[in-house]
Length: 267
Image 1 (cartoon, helix red, strand yellow):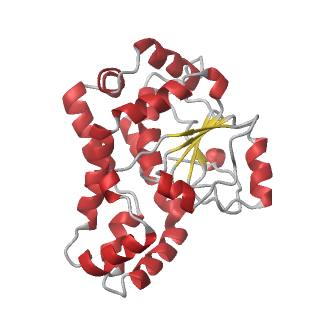
Image 2 (cartoon, one colour):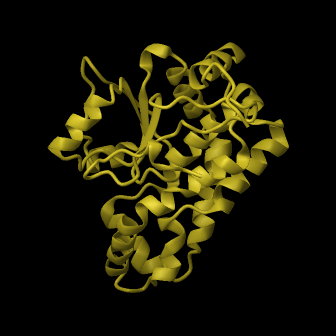
Image 3 (tube, one colour):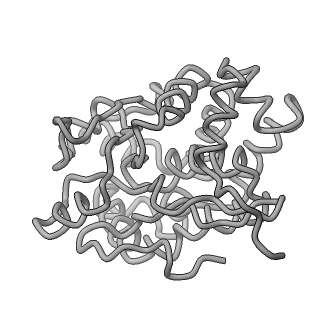
């Protein structure tokens, strides 16, 4: 269970946190201050930007689509101090403009199952973005790119999936990874409630709060079904990253060495 050690006092970021600090199965621990996760960075205040730079983050992995990147322009841009790797993770068939999303809500919301939409998205991430996962892990396995931030729009699904893969690769127990994944719900509760009301208005109240809920939160079954598919086919996450995502073993080994503290801690 998370404590306050991985939380950071941003004014405009609710779901920013360290993915490290978790105990591994062999009694060691993921390093803190190496990899962070967050929602998009367009709303950062002046104080937030200053605090961001204090974390010495050298690289950003932006998992948003080009449409999302244009709609919400990050306040942290690529410069001599920060590299930005843009790796679009999304099922392109579900990429909407604002107007198209409005039409979708009004005309199709009575027939669509939003829980199925989310499960399809996680299935796509497990089986359809091997090249993108390769880019991310290969980039992060370079020590010169760390510390780094991984983010998408809400910081809960795409970011949650990639963060879970990294934690599992590091040897964090599955149940601990699930707990950390679900921790997003505590951090985004207020902002997701506001977003739910906005979607209701956009749909002309065709969509009830209960029906919207599956897309506004993370659920155990979303990640678990994707994880189960990976394990059933490849046996473990390391084999999945090596065989499906074509990441060389030596890159995975060096990445794990970067992620984990050297000595075991007490049980």
